[in-house]
Image 1 (cartoon, rainbow, N blue to C red):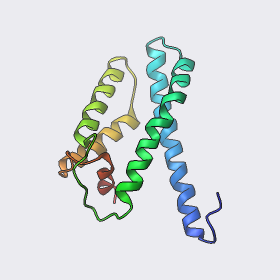
Image 2: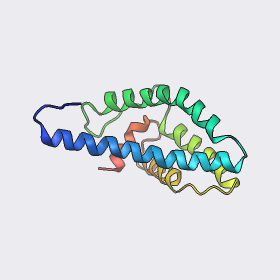
Image 3: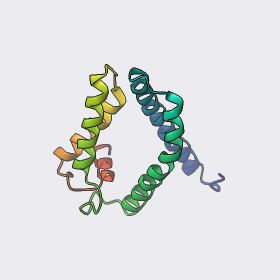
Image 4: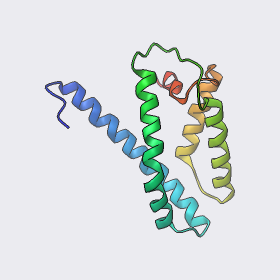
Length: 135
């Protein structure tokens, strides 16, 4: 996609999109290991993910776009899913993976980010609030 003459914007976009790409690779590796440990077809997992992920990702993209358009470190309480709910779900997923001997360094980092956001008082906010932990 041509972004005009804004070289900085093009570079930032390139690096940001690649960051999402590489984070997805890490998540796919952990999830695939979990499938293998459970004798579940990685191909079936991939096929199911191909159907479900675009819907989930679109929701995340919409939320980050909306929540961070006028970023000022302030966030309204979540109308759907709080950071606390996201952290609890992540803990549950990681616990299951760990019980099967799957190492989850990326998932563990995500959980820590969520927990840091909760410690900062964002437990009732949308997951987008974790950006405050990164700036």
